[in-house]
Image 1 (cartoon, one colour):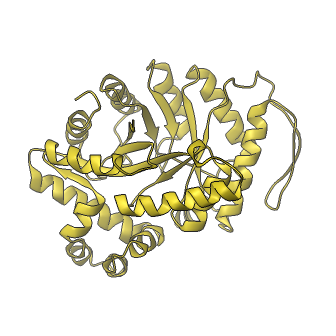
Image 2 (spheres, rainbow, N blue to C red):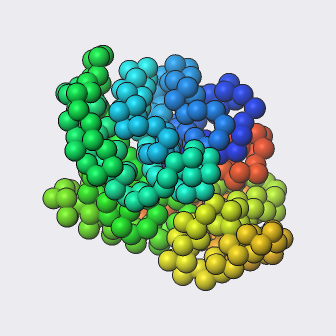
Length: 333
């Protein structure tokens, strides 16, 4: 049976309490995991601690902490601490993000993100083992580090993001899970083939890799509002968040992705929105009235190899629209 997770809102929320409230609501609705994004507002570790202390059963996870703004050793310490605070319910989600975030916001050089992510995962696992860390990589060389607290038992899974075939293949080789976003059900099926190829190269069983599909969802009785929120979200990600999402859509056969990106970058937001046509929206998002949104989510759950679908929300949705959507597509609805 496919899990149904929730990816908490990317857009700024008024308080930490409001984020915790979403998590408690998700727990009450039967969601399996609440994933917290870390963007340019509150730091993820502090908010995840509040989420852990004020829930009892739902898993909590980071989606994502980037592999540049924290050292691998610190990421390992953070994962160990959150696993303790949550009584074993934590899942560490990592990814390289992109040059816009890493270079412009964090002032770090962005280079060879796949290698950096792989080395970070390997070091984090050594930290979580409780053994002394000795690591000689291309990006990182460590010696003598060891946790001063008890190593977590069980160790939290270390999951990664990635968009392109090589990134997903590497997830199949070394990670406990992979998170895909901005992918249609057919696009997810293609990337699962990359997971399987990577697992084969790593002499692993692909079933060991938890595959999570993030799906933008908006379930409202006002179907036109739901459609427009979904359209705005897609246009922003394709046009304004680097080239990764543009490239992902082009790989899936949506030639208009390049035009959306170019229009957004040129400042013509209205044209960018117009170019996000109904076909892209229906293939990529679960929007509409509650029944239609649920049916569109179920298309992902029917894909062989997807272990969890993470319900996410358009960045322009307000608190009431987020709550209504979360309730409408909750596992226990």
